[in-house]
Image 1 (cartoon, helix red, strand yellow):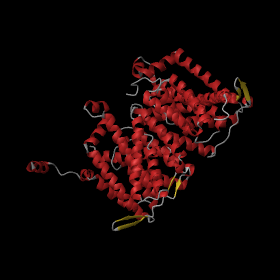
Image 2 (tube, one colour; image 1 turned 90 degrees about the vertical axis):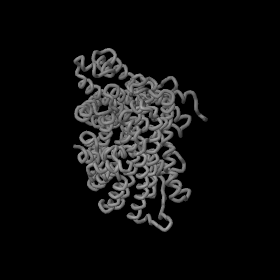
Image 3 (cartoon, each protein chain N blue to C red; image 1 turned 120 degrees about the horizontal axis):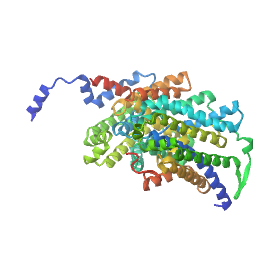
Image 4 (cartoon, rainbow over the protein chains, first blue to last red; image 1 turned 45 degrees about the vertical axis):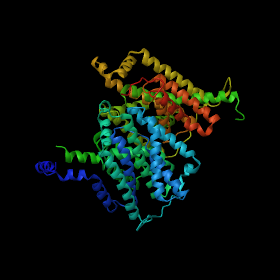
Length: 327
Length: 294
């Protein structure tokens, strides 16, 4: 057995550097992200890229890998943010309870909305997820503890204490590294899921749902599971956002936050592992640069997005992957 | 529950009808475009908003409400046709998600352009003098302008029905919604039909915006919440079904205004409750054909 594989390895041409990187995508992603704070203009933007990148990664599981366009992921991001926010600011609980609770809350919400939305197909899915997330928006708006229009304030996590380690979250670089550790864990988990047979089933649904069903995969269960996982990851991103900003705005549940992640994913490259971070960086840098110059930066972001839909539907990272990989 | 008289319920029913009328116009346009082109127009709310602003701008040039009533849908419809020809057309045959994403980006551009031209602040819009005041309908006094909105909607729906059911062009539209390929084989320029239907759908959305302006005022963001409503109405009614759009629009308008009366805190959520119920019982919508989306 061993000899056999050795022979195979010996016979195979040396793998290209690129493919070697691909097989260690989590490590490669984390290494690139490690350099980010020294590349982008300021620390806050770097943390935002990380948080919205993670939001995009979660969304990408449903949109990119499973091929279902959801316009309601703000609900999961927002619920994660509100859950962590309320636990920290009002119940005074530590971060290590708030983060898992946010993931759980978002996953439960994803389960409930998923059960409804997955009954519909194709284009319906986008409309139903949007409507359901708008419903969540109104419910949270009226929820007495949410602070309504003013949002939630005082989500202060000043420091993170681990055995033998004390991280000061008032220092942007330390915050970035602490967040990166959380993101790395999430990426690791996602990578394992994507490599598992379940991940294969998810992509099979994207490629040909009828065939996946005929092969004996339980399509509805797979869709629901992926939707719940995706919701959980987005909830984690929301919780990190709440801790980063020390507050939660009601806009985090708004339809535009759902649209934001669609843009991030498409700009970066849907269905690619690292694409969402590239998309988040592109979106936030365009926003950062254009908002210095004009208050109407949304015009340029919208036009850029349309340009990508028309001419680069694979996004920046997707196009790069295609060029380096294709023949 | 004090002070809720049958009269009040009757008046609120009419308020719901006027609200529903705007929803119907939005959903009919959305459904028409989807039924024909299988494009979900995410900029539909933005076209609604542009209709309101086009009315505001046109009224300053030609201060005649009735002329504007005719001109606004034409202007917005022509703009819609321009969008179809230049932006949506290249995406046909590339999957249903792409036109949706494109129109989503387009909505951003349209909203921001309106902000640049007209400013960020919302503005109130007056109803024409002739339609101010109220009329005595059996249950009490009711704002005349809202009755007018209901009337215009009914007239437009009758016109649309005649156009689709009784004209030869309508026949092509119906056939094209069933099977565009066969229609093309029969020697009909489907591209031209799609162009006209897109213009028609967006024009009706523009008209809805123009009609809604004196009721709710105008602001660049007015299309956002309306888009959700239009989606809910189309999902409840059944995608691509015009009858469904009409029934669901009226239903949701009335339920919403009744909720304002009886359970005000649940008014905004009421339409979603209906949608959830419909999805549980009949996922294809009240009048939708099963399997249309496969």
